[in-house]
Length: 251
Image (tube, rainbow, N blue to C red; front, side, top):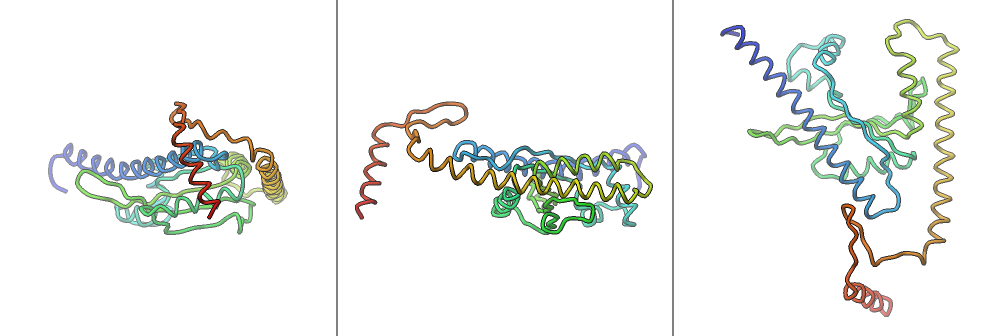
């Protein structure tokens, strides 16, 4: 590379900034999609499967360290090819069935492309780790071109997330072999979390069934709430809907 050292530094800095910026924008695109789903469920459904989300962007130092561990050459194309979790988002939900429901909702969006899926729920890791990992390609529209960026999506229940967070803290910066009895206890704790997930999902389904039976005649369809504003539906519109239902029933 020729030129003044300061100019060389600026060029490298701008390349790194542009590279990281693509992943930042891809995360924002995915976060917007999830926000829309949350708002839709809030307005139209009684139950929202998405509890909360957390996103993160690997630092350039972390990316370089992972490239060194993998023995890859240091270039931006190589980083994109070999490091698939530069951008990541974790979606936490209440129940196991929610995980696959959220997966299906994301994968049904035409501008997202699922490139890989690892189901650590059906096939847990030996230590007991459970989560659904997806790699999705997200289109990012820049001022001069379109980029397709890989984002890792992890979907797990609250119980799975609780176990994984504590397991990470226990192992954080621990370089030695973990005693066998501790591994056994961690696995037992993961199994307990799974048992709790299954029991809570069963209770949830039973209670939802009871709620549906009790509230069949208690719906108030005359009001809607959008963006914290309450709107009264016009009587003429309600009459029109009622007339259509009568015609449908008569047929």
